[in-house]
Image (cartoon, rainbow, N blue to C red; front, top):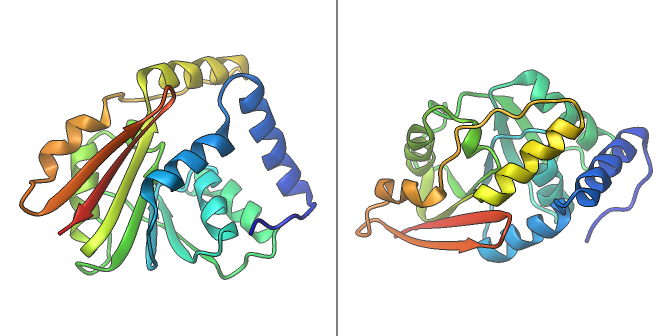
Amino acid sequence: MKIEVTSQQYQRYVERIEFYKEHGYDIESQRKFIFESAFPFYEPILEIGTGKGYMTLELAQQGYSLISIDISRAEQDFAQRLIRSLPLRGKVDFRIYNAESMPFPDATFKTIFCVNSIHHFDSPGKVLTEALRVLRREGKCILSDFTKKGMQLIHDIHQMKGKSHSSHYSSLSQLQEYCPPRDYMTKMYSNDIQEVFVIESR
């Protein structure tokens, strides 16, 4: 059940959600699509690419505990302050790690999420290889990113705000080669804006 709370930090989050929705990107609707594509999934959970914490917050509000990593302390700061402004302390363990080389033992997590981060990575194949290393047998790795149309929309929204949005766009289907069928079952879901690539370890 989602937590209803009023705080300055949460209000900033709501304003961002509304701004994106007004200009064509419904963050909450897309998060629901990702959840439905990924379900069921279980703890322990790793999130790769905290960013502003949209998925982090969604997972915590749904009652999940998780570790969330990002290479940028500045980028992760918004998410940390957002979580601290809500009665969710202890649900998220924030860490600054490079997703291409994470200090976790093999087979640590039952679920891994990487949402709207792949297009920022110089070497998405390396990130996926490392994610699969720390994924448990019969665990799920859920990658989600924008479609070509969605990417253009995000670029346009950033320009409206006077900002730039760097990306190395490629379809998630190109990562299929890192998931040999003998070891993984894969499914691809998509709508106009979002792709979801679900990888389940055999």
